[in-house]
Length: 372
Ligand SMILES: [Fe+2]
Image 1 (cartoon, protein in one colour):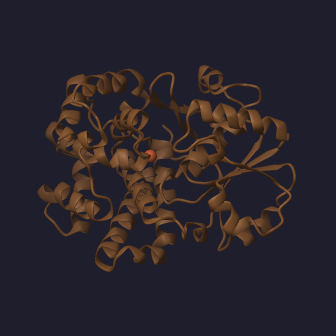
Image 2 (cartoon, rainbow, N blue to C red; image 1 turned 60 degrees about the vertical axis):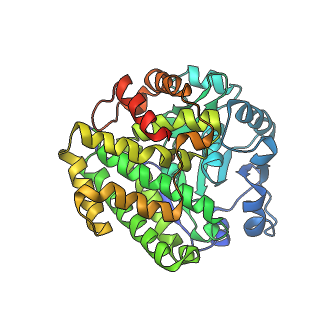
Image 3 (cartoon, protein in one colour; image 1 turned 135 degrees about the vertical axis):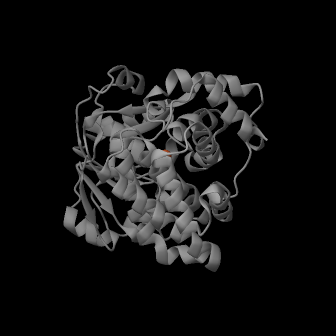
């Protein structure tokens, strides 16, 4: 059994210019980024690298249509290395660029995990959520199938992952909130996965602790307090990435995908909409084991009894990002059986990592409980 995968080399730099000095960017490098992230930090450096701004191909999270258009333009650059500087969308697309030549997104999904690396890949996250810099999975909204799906292959690991806390300073509070809640969900889901090991749990539990303590400081001191915590949040997100890169995410992610895919709810927010519903149902089905351990750990951090842990957790998270009921996103009651079918049919990769097996009726029950 795999204990933990440490694949990309992990680097950290205080500033973006320290990174550029160390990595010597050249004309055969293709930087995939967003203009509002790239310009303030790299715009004045006179880099010879080619640059693609993702937002010129569409807004929001990656779709098959958007990625195919970027692949088309990237092919023309003849680049030998892709450098991703951005949030989850940029990172997910860059991983596809690293394994594609003439193929479309549908072609790549059809090849399963048998992809080969075609270009070098360097990933620099600019949110504190995805942990995606150290994983080999890309999530793309397959618009023709009406849901998000993971593309996974050993070839999609970055060669180097780079942490530069400075790049998070301009992150709006809303993005900080959704991305860090995503990291918390990664940490909790990976801890509860049957694939968790003592090694992955070191990272999961440490990430939970750092994120909850950080939220407590923000709840007490205000949103501006996050700036002094960015280093911690970036590390916590990376720890959670290392944990779920081996142990996997689970039903919270699986059940959030139809919501994100059809109603365009940001990934971290759609996870938060599902998170406590799944945890409460786990507790109804099986109260001992790792669930008891993580509940006790979170209760200690939150200063409450174990029985009250989910209420206390929601109370704290609501100060960071108020949770909405599914109907507030426009979801209709009649969508719920379709959401459930989609999860049971298309998200088995994630559902296999459930703390306890969840069947159709249980998944539907969770959606119904989260509806109002
Ligand atoms: Fe996630």
